[in-house]
Length: 287
Image 1: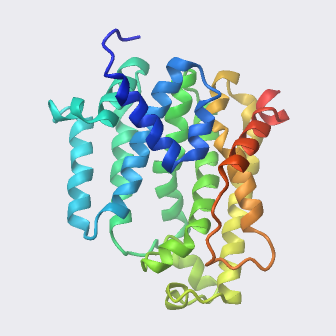
Image 2: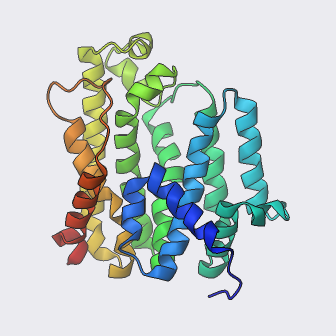
């Protein structure tokens, strides 16, 4: 491990950021060893910073500028100011200490540029590509912090990320519709005769329910595959995949009959703690 440590408040900053904006992943870090936990928090804080850009700007250009800063930082073209940014300082330390590949981190930033615009997600394949480069990549990088990379871990990370990402698309529908932003694939909407303007207007229709049922079915398949693959990865890497325990719980809630898809469901932190603790002791994570 490196002997040059950033100020302790950088660590605290990252932990607070993840705890505030990505509580399931924060809880998952509690099941990791201390040295690895610090790197995981750096990775997850970086993800939070990228995801939050969408809500922090009113026009695409300022968002593009923020993304470019992160891209330049990862390319080694930002000097001085990177170390002054607590998340960047911690991320650079994690990259150095755990030999993390920079390319998937840069690609994650690039993919989130889609968030800045109101272009509809065109196809299911496009959504899967977006999620593979964001959610799945995050699982794979976290697993690499905890254990050596392997094909089995990459395979698991892909399915875990697709399951988590699709569930988030369903859960975020109220917010996305209010911003006239559509992560529901246009191809799937068309196949079920669902009108995009009805979605933006917050109209709950049988057509929209069919769209969401198809997406929930896709998420269930990826989740089942991910859970079946856990036994093939080292036990040390499994803490990186604990958030799929929350995915399973969220999918069950989102699939309840009669649920209004435009009614947000705030999550309870206590319930999240309980859900991930139970997941950590489940057969999938311990066998």
